[in-house]
Amino acid sequence: MILVLRALGVGDLATAVPALRGLRAAFPGETLSLAAPTWLTPLIDTIGGIDRIVPAGELEPLTAAPAMPRLAVNLHGSGPESHRRLQALAPEALWAFASRPAGHLDGPGWHDDEHEVQRWCRLVRYYGVPCSPEDLDLAVPAVDVPRGVTIIHPGAKSPARRWPAARFAAVARGLRSAGHRVLITGSASEHDLCVRVAHEAGLDAACVPRTELAELAALVAGARLVISGDTGIAHLATAYRTPSVVLFGPVSPQRWGPPAGRPYHRAIWHGTRSERGDLPGPVHPALLAVTEDEVLAAVEKVCHADVTP
Image 1 (cartoon, rainbow, N blue to C red):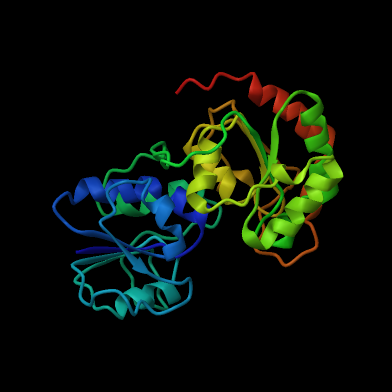
Image 2 (image 1 turned 120 degrees about the vertical axis):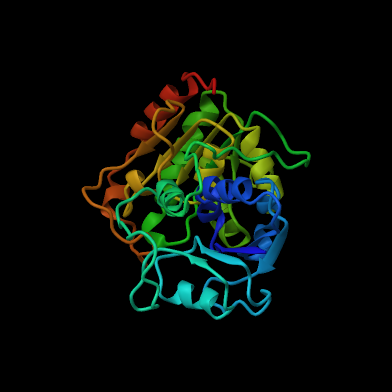
Protein backbone atom coordinates (compact mmCIF):
# COMPACT_ATOMS: atom_id res chain seq x y z
CA MET A 1 0.00 0.00 0.00
CA ILE A 2 1.02 3.59 -0.73
CA LEU A 3 -0.12 6.19 1.79
CA VAL A 4 -0.15 9.88 0.82
CA LEU A 5 -0.65 12.62 3.40
CA ARG A 6 -2.48 15.80 2.32
CA ALA A 7 -4.76 16.65 5.25
CA LEU A 8 -5.61 20.23 4.35
CA GLY A 9 -8.36 22.04 2.38
CA VAL A 10 -9.91 22.36 -1.08
CA GLY A 11 -7.19 24.46 -2.70
CA ASP A 12 -4.45 22.36 -1.14
CA LEU A 13 -5.99 19.19 -2.54
CA ALA A 14 -6.47 20.71 -5.99
CA THR A 15 -2.83 21.79 -6.23
CA ALA A 16 -1.66 18.26 -5.34
CA VAL A 17 -3.70 16.58 -8.10
CA PRO A 18 -0.83 16.32 -10.63
CA ALA A 19 1.44 14.70 -8.03
CA LEU A 20 -1.31 12.29 -6.97
CA ARG A 21 -1.93 11.31 -10.58
CA GLY A 22 1.78 10.83 -11.11
CA LEU A 23 1.88 8.42 -8.17
CA ARG A 24 -1.18 6.59 -9.45
CA ALA A 25 0.40 6.08 -12.85
CA ALA A 26 3.75 5.02 -11.37
CA PHE A 27 2.23 2.34 -9.14
CA PRO A 28 -0.75 0.93 -11.07
CA GLY A 29 -0.95 -2.30 -9.07
CA GLU A 30 -0.74 -0.74 -5.61
CA THR A 31 -3.53 0.42 -3.33
CA LEU A 32 -3.27 4.21 -3.23
CA SER A 33 -4.58 5.67 0.03
CA LEU A 34 -4.95 9.37 0.76
CA ALA A 35 -4.91 10.66 4.34
CA ALA A 36 -7.24 13.66 4.24
CA PRO A 37 -10.33 15.11 5.95
CA THR A 38 -13.39 13.01 5.10
CA TRP A 39 -15.43 16.10 4.18
CA LEU A 40 -13.20 16.34 1.09
CA THR A 41 -14.45 12.95 -0.16
CA PRO A 42 -16.70 14.39 -2.93
CA LEU A 43 -13.73 16.29 -4.34
CA ILE A 44 -11.29 13.40 -3.90
CA ASP A 45 -13.69 11.27 -5.96
CA THR A 46 -13.30 13.71 -8.88
CA ILE A 47 -9.54 13.06 -9.07
CA GLY A 48 -9.80 9.39 -9.93
CA GLY A 49 -7.46 6.60 -8.90
CA ILE A 50 -7.65 7.07 -5.11
CA ASP A 51 -8.55 3.65 -3.70
CA ARG A 52 -9.03 4.58 -0.05
CA ILE A 53 -9.47 7.68 2.06
CA VAL A 54 -7.83 7.56 5.49
CA PRO A 55 -9.57 10.06 7.80
CA ALA A 56 -7.04 12.65 8.93
CA GLY A 57 -7.06 16.10 10.49
CA GLU A 58 -4.41 18.69 9.78
CA LEU A 59 -2.40 18.26 12.99
CA GLU A 60 -3.73 14.95 14.29
CA PRO A 61 -1.95 11.56 14.51
CA LEU A 62 -2.83 9.12 11.73
CA THR A 63 -4.65 6.71 14.03
CA ALA A 64 -6.85 5.35 11.23
CA ALA A 65 -3.92 4.54 8.92
CA PRO A 66 -2.58 1.00 8.65
CA ALA A 67 0.91 0.50 10.02
CA MET A 68 3.96 -0.25 7.88
CA PRO A 69 2.84 0.92 4.43
CA ARG A 70 5.24 0.04 1.65
CA LEU A 71 5.62 3.71 0.83
CA ALA A 72 4.54 6.89 2.62
CA VAL A 73 4.52 10.17 0.67
CA ASN A 74 4.36 13.53 2.43
CA LEU A 75 2.44 15.95 0.21
CA HIS A 76 1.43 17.90 3.30
CA GLY A 77 4.39 20.07 4.26
CA SER A 78 8.12 20.44 4.78
CA GLY A 79 8.25 18.78 8.20
CA PRO A 80 9.09 17.95 10.85
CA GLU A 81 5.56 17.47 12.23
CA SER A 82 4.07 15.96 9.08
CA HIS A 83 7.14 13.76 8.56
CA ARG A 84 6.83 12.41 12.07
CA ARG A 85 3.17 11.53 11.58
CA LEU A 86 4.18 9.28 8.71
CA GLN A 87 7.33 7.98 10.38
CA ALA A 88 5.18 6.77 13.29
CA LEU A 89 3.62 4.24 10.88
CA ALA A 90 7.05 2.68 10.20
CA PRO A 91 6.81 2.76 6.40
CA GLU A 92 9.34 0.82 4.36
CA ALA A 93 10.17 4.08 2.56
CA LEU A 94 9.33 7.76 3.08
CA TRP A 95 9.25 10.25 0.22
CA ALA A 96 9.39 13.78 1.57
CA PHE A 97 11.33 17.01 1.54
CA ALA A 98 14.56 16.88 3.48
CA SER A 99 14.05 17.72 7.17
CA ARG A 100 16.95 17.54 9.59
CA PRO A 101 14.71 17.95 12.69
CA ALA A 102 12.71 14.91 11.57
CA GLY A 103 15.86 12.91 10.80
CA HIS A 104 14.86 12.67 7.14
CA LEU A 105 17.94 13.70 5.16
CA ASP A 106 16.80 12.21 1.87
CA GLY A 107 14.64 14.29 -0.43
CA PRO A 108 14.94 17.66 -2.18
CA GLY A 109 15.19 20.97 -0.40
CA TRP A 110 12.16 23.13 0.30
CA HIS A 111 11.75 26.41 -1.67
CA ASP A 112 9.47 28.93 0.04
CA ASP A 113 8.60 30.89 -3.11
CA GLU A 114 7.78 27.90 -5.31
CA HIS A 115 4.30 27.54 -6.80
CA GLU A 116 2.36 24.92 -4.87
CA VAL A 117 1.65 22.76 -7.94
CA GLN A 118 5.30 22.79 -8.99
CA ARG A 119 6.41 22.02 -5.43
CA TRP A 120 4.72 18.63 -5.23
CA CYS A 121 5.55 17.72 -8.80
CA ARG A 122 9.20 18.43 -8.02
CA LEU A 123 9.03 16.19 -4.98
CA VAL A 124 7.71 13.12 -6.79
CA ARG A 125 10.01 13.74 -9.75
CA TYR A 126 12.96 13.65 -7.35
CA TYR A 127 12.01 10.05 -6.63
CA GLY A 128 11.64 9.19 -10.32
CA VAL A 129 7.89 9.68 -10.83
CA PRO A 130 6.86 11.70 -13.92
CA CYS A 131 4.45 14.52 -13.14
CA SER A 132 2.71 17.10 -15.33
CA PRO A 133 1.83 20.40 -13.58
CA GLU A 134 -0.84 20.97 -16.24
CA ASP A 135 -2.78 17.86 -15.17
CA LEU A 136 -5.22 19.83 -13.01
CA ASP A 137 -8.63 18.99 -14.50
CA LEU A 138 -11.24 17.30 -12.31
CA ALA A 139 -14.34 15.27 -13.15
CA VAL A 140 -17.68 17.00 -12.65
CA PRO A 141 -19.85 15.61 -9.81
CA ALA A 142 -23.16 14.19 -11.02
CA VAL A 143 -25.47 16.62 -9.22
CA ASP A 144 -28.14 18.93 -10.60
CA VAL A 145 -27.15 22.60 -10.31
CA PRO A 146 -27.83 25.79 -12.30
CA ARG A 147 -25.54 26.46 -15.25
CA GLY A 148 -24.21 29.68 -16.70
CA VAL A 149 -24.23 31.61 -13.43
CA THR A 150 -21.65 34.09 -12.22
CA ILE A 151 -20.32 33.10 -8.79
CA ILE A 152 -19.06 35.64 -6.29
CA HIS A 153 -17.35 34.01 -3.32
CA PRO A 154 -16.51 36.63 -0.67
CA GLY A 155 -15.08 34.37 2.03
CA ALA A 156 -11.58 33.10 2.77
CA LYS A 157 -10.03 31.21 5.65
CA SER A 158 -8.09 34.15 7.08
CA PRO A 159 -9.35 37.75 7.48
CA ALA A 160 -6.24 39.07 5.71
CA ARG A 161 -7.45 37.40 2.49
CA ARG A 162 -11.05 38.72 2.59
CA TRP A 163 -11.75 41.64 0.27
CA PRO A 164 -14.33 43.95 1.91
CA ALA A 165 -17.94 42.78 1.60
CA ALA A 166 -19.08 46.18 0.33
CA ARG A 167 -16.70 45.91 -2.62
CA PHE A 168 -17.93 42.43 -3.53
CA ALA A 169 -21.47 43.83 -3.37
CA ALA A 170 -20.54 46.68 -5.71
CA VAL A 171 -19.10 44.20 -8.21
CA ALA A 172 -22.23 42.05 -7.90
CA ARG A 173 -24.43 45.08 -8.66
CA GLY A 174 -22.36 45.94 -11.70
CA LEU A 175 -22.47 42.41 -13.05
CA ARG A 176 -26.20 42.06 -12.47
CA SER A 177 -26.74 45.31 -14.39
CA ALA A 178 -24.64 43.85 -17.22
CA GLY A 179 -26.93 40.82 -17.45
CA HIS A 180 -25.10 38.28 -15.27
CA ARG A 181 -27.10 35.87 -13.12
CA VAL A 182 -25.18 36.30 -9.86
CA LEU A 183 -24.96 33.78 -7.02
CA ILE A 184 -23.10 34.43 -3.75
CA THR A 185 -21.46 31.29 -2.36
CA GLY A 186 -19.62 30.41 0.81
CA SER A 187 -19.18 27.78 3.48
CA ALA A 188 -21.72 27.30 6.26
CA SER A 189 -19.68 29.56 8.53
CA GLU A 190 -19.65 32.25 5.82
CA HIS A 191 -23.42 32.24 5.22
CA ASP A 192 -24.05 35.50 7.10
CA LEU A 193 -21.30 37.19 5.09
CA CYS A 194 -22.89 35.95 1.84
CA VAL A 195 -26.31 37.22 2.90
CA ARG A 196 -24.81 40.63 3.70
CA VAL A 197 -23.13 40.85 0.29
CA ALA A 198 -26.35 39.82 -1.45
CA HIS A 199 -28.41 42.34 0.52
CA GLU A 200 -26.02 45.21 -0.26
CA ALA A 201 -26.05 44.17 -3.93
CA GLY A 202 -29.85 44.18 -4.06
CA LEU A 203 -30.08 40.40 -4.58
CA ASP A 204 -32.72 38.21 -2.98
CA ALA A 205 -32.21 35.20 -0.71
CA ALA A 206 -32.40 32.76 -3.64
CA CYS A 207 -29.06 34.15 -4.81
CA VAL A 208 -27.35 32.73 -1.71
CA PRO A 209 -27.56 28.92 -2.15
CA ARG A 210 -26.45 26.56 0.59
CA THR A 211 -24.13 24.16 -1.21
CA GLU A 212 -22.30 21.02 -0.17
CA LEU A 213 -18.86 20.46 -1.70
CA ALA A 214 -20.08 18.32 -4.62
CA GLU A 215 -22.71 20.93 -5.49
CA LEU A 216 -20.19 23.75 -5.30
CA ALA A 217 -17.79 21.90 -7.61
CA ALA A 218 -20.56 21.20 -10.13
CA LEU A 219 -21.73 24.82 -9.90
CA VAL A 220 -18.22 26.06 -10.69
CA ALA A 221 -17.84 23.56 -13.53
CA GLY A 222 -20.91 24.95 -15.29
CA ALA A 223 -20.46 28.60 -14.34
CA ARG A 224 -19.99 31.55 -16.63
CA LEU A 225 -17.49 33.18 -14.27
CA VAL A 226 -16.01 32.94 -10.75
CA ILE A 227 -14.84 35.94 -8.71
CA SER A 228 -13.13 35.22 -5.41
CA GLY A 229 -10.21 35.87 -3.15
CA ASP A 230 -7.22 33.58 -2.78
CA THR A 231 -9.16 30.53 -1.54
CA GLY A 232 -10.30 27.05 -2.52
CA ILE A 233 -12.99 27.96 -5.07
CA ALA A 234 -10.36 29.69 -7.20
CA HIS A 235 -8.65 26.33 -7.64
CA LEU A 236 -11.95 24.73 -8.61
CA ALA A 237 -12.25 27.36 -11.35
CA THR A 238 -8.80 26.32 -12.55
CA ALA A 239 -9.72 22.63 -12.40
CA TYR A 240 -12.83 23.18 -14.53
CA ARG A 241 -11.32 25.84 -16.82
CA THR A 242 -14.02 28.28 -15.78
CA PRO A 243 -13.17 31.95 -16.38
CA SER A 244 -12.10 33.53 -13.11
CA VAL A 245 -10.86 36.70 -11.47
CA VAL A 246 -8.89 36.01 -8.28
CA LEU A 247 -7.92 38.74 -5.81
CA PHE A 248 -4.65 38.23 -3.92
CA GLY A 249 -3.43 39.88 -0.73
CA PRO A 250 -0.63 38.54 1.50
CA VAL A 251 0.41 35.74 -0.87
CA SER A 252 1.64 36.21 -4.43
CA PRO A 253 -0.18 34.47 -7.29
CA GLN A 254 3.27 33.20 -8.24
CA ARG A 255 2.80 30.76 -5.35
CA TRP A 256 -0.93 29.98 -5.43
CA GLY A 257 -2.35 31.54 -8.58
CA PRO A 258 -3.89 30.01 -11.70
CA PRO A 259 -1.63 28.56 -14.40
CA ALA A 260 0.18 30.95 -16.69
CA GLY A 261 -0.92 30.96 -20.30
CA ARG A 262 -4.66 30.87 -19.56
CA PRO A 263 -6.09 34.28 -20.46
CA TYR A 264 -9.48 33.28 -19.05
CA HIS A 265 -7.99 33.25 -15.52
CA ARG A 266 -6.82 36.60 -14.18
CA ALA A 267 -5.04 37.18 -10.88
CA ILE A 268 -4.96 40.70 -9.42
CA TRP A 269 -2.22 41.50 -6.94
CA HIS A 270 -0.62 44.74 -5.79
CA GLY A 271 1.86 43.24 -3.36
CA THR A 272 5.63 43.25 -3.51
CA ARG A 273 6.48 40.09 -1.58
CA SER A 274 4.69 37.00 -0.32
CA GLU A 275 3.82 36.69 3.34
CA ARG A 276 1.96 34.03 5.30
CA GLY A 277 -1.50 33.41 3.90
CA ASP A 278 -3.06 32.70 7.31
CA LEU A 279 -2.53 36.17 8.78
CA PRO A 280 -5.27 36.87 11.33
CA GLY A 281 -6.16 40.30 9.95
CA PRO A 282 -7.02 43.01 9.19
CA VAL A 283 -7.44 42.89 5.42
CA HIS A 284 -4.00 42.93 3.81
CA PRO A 285 -3.02 46.29 2.21
CA ALA A 286 -2.29 44.61 -1.14
CA LEU A 287 -5.88 43.35 -1.21
CA LEU A 288 -7.31 46.71 -0.17
CA ALA A 289 -5.48 48.24 -3.14
CA VAL A 290 -7.73 46.26 -5.52
CA THR A 291 -10.66 48.41 -6.72
CA GLU A 292 -14.14 47.47 -7.89
CA ASP A 293 -13.49 49.03 -11.31
CA GLU A 294 -10.31 46.98 -11.65
CA VAL A 295 -12.24 43.77 -10.98
CA LEU A 296 -14.99 44.68 -13.46
CA ALA A 297 -12.35 45.48 -16.11
CA ALA A 298 -10.73 42.09 -15.50
CA VAL A 299 -14.13 40.43 -15.86
CA GLU A 300 -14.47 41.93 -19.33
CA LYS A 301 -11.12 40.50 -20.35
CA VAL A 302 -11.65 36.96 -19.05
CA CYS A 303 -15.19 36.73 -20.40
CA HIS A 304 -13.93 37.47 -23.91
CA ALA A 305 -10.89 35.19 -23.71
CA ASP A 306 -10.65 31.89 -25.56
CA VAL A 307 -11.28 28.96 -23.20
CA THR A 308 -10.29 26.32 -25.76
CA PRO A 309 -7.95 23.78 -23.99
